[in-house]
Image (cartoon, rainbow, N blue to C red):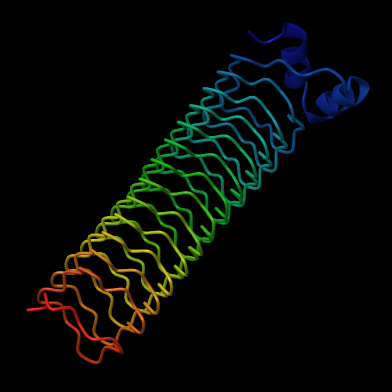
Length: 295
């Protein structure tokens, strides 16, 4: 439970709170389980505060400093966290449905099991954030920085990741079903066993990405850069790879039945045991002989 004196200081307003924190720098504010719904805490210094299981539904937290705050099982649904600072914050199993986190700083934040459905994380900085097992269905992550983030087994279906940076991120077994990844940066991203069925990856940069055993059926990878990507045993049935760069990629044992490879660069691609039944290969740059299984 929140300490009565700490809650009283908070309720006296921003100036009193700032003075109290300055006078008590070693005190960790305990606001756990407090009902702070619809409060305006914009610009407050809540760094290192204990807000475990607090109710911040529809709270105003614009540019609020929540660095290293404890926010486990917090309710931030519909809260406004625009430009908030949440670096190293603990948001395990936090409820952030429809929260506005546009431009927020979440470097090294822990969001394992958090519910971020329909939240806005546009231009947010999630560098090295831990989002394992979180729900990010339908979230706006356009131009967000997810470089080095851990997204294993995360549900990102129908999310918007246009121009987002997922370089060196771990997206093993992640669900990207019908996700918008146009022009996204996925350099060396681990996508092993991920589901990208019907995802839109037009013009995406996937140099040296690991897509082994991934499901890419009916996805759009037109004009994407898949140079040196690992697509071993990937499912690419009816996938659009028109004009894609696949130079030196590994497509061994991949299934490209009915795939569109028109104008693709397949120079020095590994096509060992690759299934290319009814694949469209006109205008393709292929400097090695095709396998015998093409019909």
